[in-house]
Image (cartoon, rainbow, N blue to C red; front, side):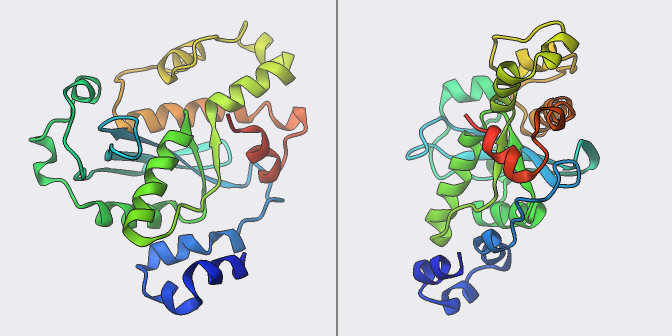
Length: 236
């Protein structure tokens, strides 16, 4: 990993020119310990609100996140920020997330929010529902701003749900069946998680955290005990 970083940046000098949270993230691969137990690991459940789903044209406008340790959620340890997009808002997306141009008038710049967010997440494994969408947008923004991509490992709650569906009958029996509806809010309701508001980044991050919490306790019985195991099955 060290050699790869050096090839990308041409040595440590370029890394020194990056903001500290970005430089720390760029070397995260050196610190990832795949043997860490899933119940001892640090996680950050997060979600973004977007102007659309085309990462080449659209932009993040909100990030929400909450920290976890194993299956424990820390409600007071959160991150939530609006950020100025580098494209125009679309009427169809405003209808979904209800964030308007007026709301974004006082929003922070993308670099400011991204650097604070990277500091917040540190080396944690990221958790989300269809998390590849959120990590792709964050990674693309980082590449555009700093020339590097996001290095945190991630786990998808929908991927975990589908893996449990295929591999653990006890999970289905416990919850009186599984759900075929894949969206975050339907899945949350199926597993008795109250949904008070939809398409709010911080609220959606809490929903993802609670889904992950419910799924996590069944994994050791299926042989998923380490972060290496978890990352391998928690994807779509």
